[in-house]
Image (tube, rainbow over the protein chains, first blue to last red):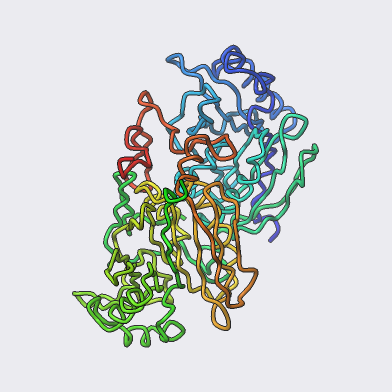
Length: 258
Length: 258
């Protein structure tokens, strides 16, 4: 039965990990921009292919078609193919010069649905919620935090896991520039493993998407089935901040048809 | 200048605090239902008036006009007047028999805008977000948690404070039935005070709505200005789970015109 266990074998690096301009000014970031069809993607694709791995090598400064500057994460497969791209939706303003992306992105990797998230995205619960709703088993939040608010991000990683019943993998830059404290949280909000501080290290873990299904079915702590909250008899819940609503019949994580 | 400091002087008790049926079956809760114009409200109003206090005496089992059973919080002023009522939007299903309310509610108490939240509401970040958007300075979450998932609720109280830059006051029942761990979190997510366990005690604190404005203006840790995220040049952000969107020009907590 061991062969039935999905093995994504994904290697993840922090936001802008390979971009020297990450520690520089907005002008440095603009100067580092290149197209998706460019040397950064080519180099990373080659690494993935050479090692035969799934690779999320952080993000890079993408020059968009209309002069935009995006902070773009790219997921590569073991053949070096691009499996998905994601443009950061919530740039850290006003410090960052990035143009916001507009598309929530999930990528399927060997039976595991991975939601892509970059740094400050985690501070807006709408972001993780859309990824959960799109069926993510794991939210991978790549981060380049050099500031003391990493403490808050550790709380948010747990909260985003709890409210969406997904794994959250928060991968921050190590020292001397980043403050580290990467962590992996399970679908009930329990911290599975964490870097205590800014030292360079690799967190390893085996995540099981069946755990998400178990938690959603039987409840967090056997108690809370957040994705089964609504019944057909319920009225839609108006959410005025979004000019939107929760419609009972659409409140489901089974967006992948399983 | 001390007189300029808003003093709400609000006394808060846990969810269903005065309702003996709180620990019983759905049938017990239904049997305890009464109209808003009934003896429970009359009694609580009398207590507020007699002591000349603002009072949020937990919630009660409200018999709705169409046979609904609501879990309804009522805020009283020092004259015994009803300042606001709120029907729990996210009942703890399937255990609770309550009909969901549909209206996010804020109440102004002597210059402090208080958002009302009941127990499981805190598990759905949409709830706190609407209250923040409606201008809440403080989210008061009254709770009757008797289970081990209080650990997760402590995380969520912090996260809801961080993401909305509001105070969160989470007031849980004490032992022997409740597991306690009430806490007060500031608009940067810092726990100001907390009950360590289930013992009976009263948490006291002075909350300053100016702190919310400071944090929103200068940022969490001087870094993150969540309510100033969007610019007029940004496109609306589509949120598919809600059939809604974040419209840049509507992303503001200044819903009270200050």
